[in-house]
Amino acid sequence: MPSAMLSAVLEEEPDLYEAFPPHVDPTGITILTDSPPGKKAPLKTFEEVQPLLQPGRKRELKLLIRENSWPINSPVRAALWPALCRQHQHGKSMLDGFYWDMVTQVFGTVELPDKPIMLPPFVEATHCLGYHLTRKGRAVADRVVSVLGYACPDITYSPSLYPITAALLHFMPEEECYHCMASLVASKEKMFITQTKLLNEVTWKTVMQIAKKHASAAQHLSRLSGAIGPERIYADWQWWILAALPFPHLVRVLDCFFHEGIKVFYRVALAILILFHKHSTNQNSEWYAEATKNGVDHAIDKFCRNMPASPTKLLRTAFSIRALSSQYISRVFIKTEMTLKSKQVITGARLVRSRSSDNLPTSQSQVNIQMMSHTLTIREKLSEETCKQMLFTLWSWLPVRITMYQPVLLYTTEEHGCSLTTFYVRVEHHEPTLLMIKTCNNEVFGAYCSTRWFERNQKDERGNRQAYFGTGETFLFSLYPERAKYPWVGCAALADGKGDERVAHGSELFMAADSKMITIGGGDGQAIWMDENIRFGKTDRCSTFNNPPLCPSGDFEIRVLEVYGFSGA
Image: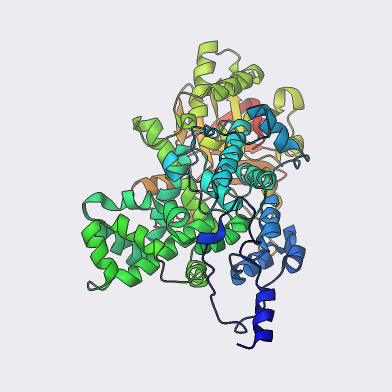
């Protein structure tokens, strides 16, 4: 190569030592080139990406990130990753200096301690991956994670939190890394990092469930798993990505992950299975021999460490998987979470669960229940002990992540009057909500509604208002005189191993509302129907929840309707 051309190439490529912060040791980092120069369009700079960082252009940004295979030493990530994480922050942005104030509060100084930092109990010691951080870099990662643990006491189990923190530190300073992690942990619209043992279990069971859509890869894995069974293999799914993939592959996965959320990990996990299947089907292949000799779990780990596909090929495989929409993944996730929770409640089985998913509420949950009991009008004519047991039972039925939020009384007919208009004004922008009805015969029942009531105004692609809305997380309950929970029938299908079968449309009618009425549950009847004056209602069996009428007469007169939201949810 002529010297002039060589100097031009060297000017374009950032120096490996200058591309990373001082707490990174770049000597072990391999730079992969996916394609010869000139074969593709030039990679985008952050200045070209920045205009897409706004709500109306998320799809454009998603496609751009997927298509731009920036090399690992590209300077773009120093600005791109913080900007992507900032999209997901919940509430007001942190003030300058907030992190260092927290560090001082936790450690008494901003100087890095000489002794090892004690990590929070939610961290798994075996998975504190540092990648290419120096010894000082590891201490910085320890400190960021410790401050996060101090600031977010609701996190009870989060093994992926440390590796993601360490990966961020390869491209940014400590304070920026903390702000990024705080945004990902607090994100409401998308999930990035699971924070309880129950949700951690839900993720790998979700991967196992969606893998069944790609039967050849999933069945191949089941055959190779032998005596250990596929569950143990899927339980390690996130470590295929975070621990085993070469660092350049992981960084490209994280480019997409910081924008799109955990669904990227799901897709990449399936891509790994598809590629492993391709390379191990032949009984004479190296990977078939590895799986039969040392076990398929070791074979997949080794396969990922020696990934035969480039980062671009891996992502292309992941994003070309059909019939794997965000809505489908979310539906499987919610059904899996509800199935695991219902098994705990019904059988008392000791699944892998977090403290906040136990039938006994956490101390924070008990405070929340106590606060709710003070505002509860329906407790009139019920003993204090009965009321307390009713609320504890109801709390055990809520999704795990909701139990740590403080309940807030949004609407009560006692104080705000009996008007559907007032109901909407006070309630419609809150998600989720808890509706509790007390009839004139002292029956107490209601519904956990997963979606905003404002969704009644949403229109479909043809411009027509949606008749029904909501998700399978919605459920009915009865508290007095009988206590019972009636989850979506789709949950039972999943528990019976029929999760892949399509639930009939008449069994997916969760919530409906207009200016004249409110309905919860439909299909061959309405589980709860209330009129515009919130005075009269009726209840019947419905296909969505397969519930009996929630009061014996079927028709009821409303004595009190109370609606609760959850502060911060």
